[in-house]
Every structure is written in C-alpha cells, then in structure tokens.
Image (cartoon, rainbow, N blue to C red; front, top):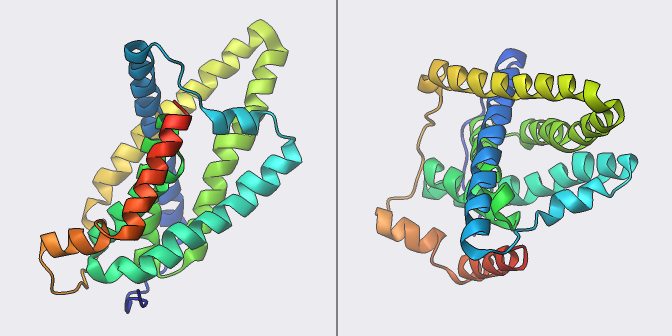
Length: 236
C-alpha cells in the first residue's frame, strides 16, 4: 500500500510524555496479570504447562546483552515495523482501526498468552502516540523505557531479592506497591485525559465491512495470523 497522507503533527510535552509512560506501565501490569490468569486457567484445563519462552531466554542472557538487544535494538526494530511501516499505510482506513490492528499484530507477534494482552495494550498506546505526533522517536523512547523496567530492572531486582533472603521480602512488598501505584495512576490519568484520547479521523470513504475486508481479510494478514497461531501452539 502507498503511504497514507498524514497532516497531524502535535508534539508531546515532557509532562504529558511522562503521563503516557505511567499509563503504559499501568496497562502493562494489568495486561500481565490478565495474561498470567488466562495462562493459569489454560494450564488447569489442558493439564499442560504453558511456557513463557521469551522470559526464560532473557533471564539466561548477560546484562549487557539484555541492554543491547531488549532495551535498544528491539524497540527500534519493532517500532519501525509495527508502527512506522504499518501505520503509515493503513492510517487512511481510520485511526481507531489502525491503532487496534497495530496492537493486535504486536500482541500476536509475541507468540504467547503471557505477553499477548499487555503487548496489545502497549501496541494500541504506541500507535496513538505515533498517529498523534507523527514521530516514531516518541514511541521508541517509550518502548525503551518500558523494556528497561520490565526486563533489565526486573531481573536486577529479582537477583537482589534472592541475595537478600528474608530481607528481600521488603523489596517484594515495595515492588508490589509500585505496581499498584502505576495501575492506580494509569486509571486516574486515563480519566483525566479522556477528552484528548480521540484523534482526528482522516479515512477513506469505505463501510466498516469494506475496511475489515481490506485491512484484515487479505492474504498477508491471514498468513500472519496463521503463523501467530503456530507460535502460540509451540509455546503452549
């Protein structure tokens, strides 16, 4: 598809950018809890373990390699593919549709139930930021900060908890309070910024069915979802 013409360019100030980061963190924790719960239910129903292979792989990596691949290279590559290339071409079908499709593809690409829900939520938020600002640098920055907190920092805290023994329980409690704080703050900010969530629609004159057929029911997307289904089965 050719690139969709975008006329919106609204820079995000430091305060609002931090607010979006807090919303991302809160949604990530809520999505992670949902993913863990659904995985636990599936584990009970099927009697089979559901492997979080990505977390296992990251936990066995050297810290410098986590910083390089997970915190720096990964966010750049993923934002180029899932936001820049994708949204530049489907934004003309409607920004809400584009945001949902970007989030859905981002979630499926993670290939497991543990990460699907929070990846979907983050994908939608990143897409909103890109469509609002027209700059991929904002989403790359958010993605890097979130991956740093969710991978490098989390593993560092886990090592500290194991090293401290009983005293590490205080650190666990503190981390739990931080998670709850992010979730509560995210809900408050979403309510506060609710009027700013909506974007100006610039879309093709198509019906909902035509948009769904063009964006979802095409060969490339069908092949992608089939491949994603295989990943989910492999990680089941």
